[in-house]
Length: 116
Image (cartoon, rainbow, N blue to C red; front, side):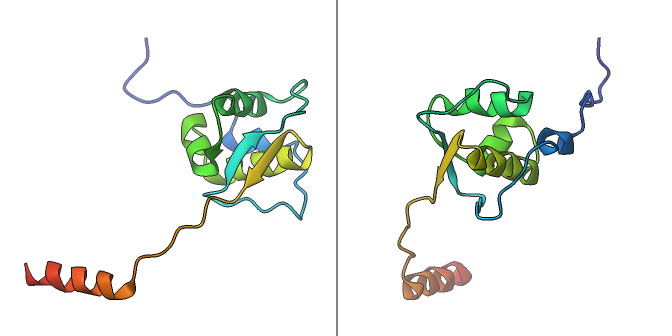
């Protein structure tokens, strides 16, 4: 039986990415989409890495979504993804560029909201 407090992790969050070497040329941001490489070697991964691969089997997710599903801080998942990209296990791509709305329309909406 557990009390009202949440159970603490046995292993601290920062240990999830402790043994990874992160290459300097890999840049991972919050909205970077992550997916499994077709020829990924999935043997011998640490538990956070294998949990991440299990999560990505259904399709690509953003780094933020991965962090939310894994229950780890964004910075830890970012290092984890960058390390697995460096080893060739994961691939990344930037999210599709979206056209920003016209600033005049936003100003009209803002002035309309202020009028309320």
